[in-house]
Length: 457
Image 1 (cartoon, rainbow, N blue to C red):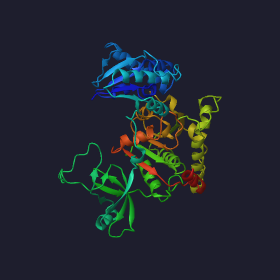
Image 2: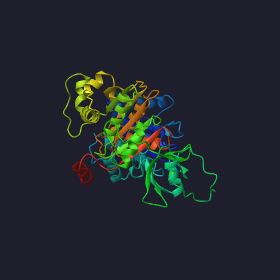
Image 3: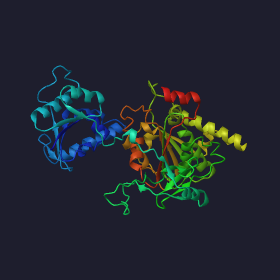
Image 4: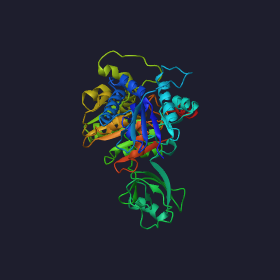
């Protein structure tokens, strides 16, 4: 049975194409949401771009017919723009846009009592208020990812002793698995009415292999789907720029970062697990030492922790310095490790920037650029929207590697949460792609205090 979906302003600002996401149902946009969109359209930000895109799309349908009774959508549904004839919410502030939008939703529900009406908003409090006045309310879920079921990028499996020995004798071990990739063909060896009990694995998934005959024996490997084998990880005895993996997840991460065939690496983990340090160390190795990439480009979204300090003086570089200080700290630490290990001093962060080896840039100006043969690190990617991550990844030119790092439980962007941010969305969408790999880091290695704080607070 068809339903009425009443959209809040934040849904359109989050995804301008949202009106085409409700199949054959009726999409109702309160006129007050149009007024709110109009206030955002001049902003030089993603909100402004989304406001302009939403307005253009609605205007496109306006040209096809009268929006008040409804215009057919390409999805098969109906688009309506509705105003409130009477003020239903007498007890609430009639001048608040949220309350006016609620009034429209209630009037739509009263006008069509036999059709289910659902208020769609990303505002938690508005969903509560809608429910309190007798409306069903839902979040806009198209980009939501269940954080508890997020692909971790690694797992443990048990194999027989002969296959385990083959990993060391022939540098590969046969793995009997189901390919979890969306396009993977179903196995012909298993009848449709039989349950396939083989593990579901994905390309470039990292494996802790355990010997079935001798359970105490384990080995670290990565799955190669095309050959249906697991191969041992590269040996990193001397470390990367003085950084040696302290646990299996860090070993997985360095393997993915150093492999040129993996063009997208997503590193997920709480504070202190080494995500940024490992990514920068691999980047310096591949650019400054091995010259695989022409330049390492490091970018971070600009969101303050706590109260903002306001505008910063100076040019772009000077304004960016406070936001990039964590990157400066990591690079300075790696340079000192490199000096201790090699006895060679290679300068400062400013020297790397002047030599063209390193670039520190805001994400604000990335739209429209093409970045070939670069190692691009986007730190704190959990503060990005799915649309922003798409913009970043589509900038990658030929021979470019993109690394996204972040912690979905440390989000400063008020417009995303742990389940709707660009980092988790990217991990979920690229799961099973042969050119991508994901590693979730669990153990903090910064210090005992940092690890304890991350677990207790």
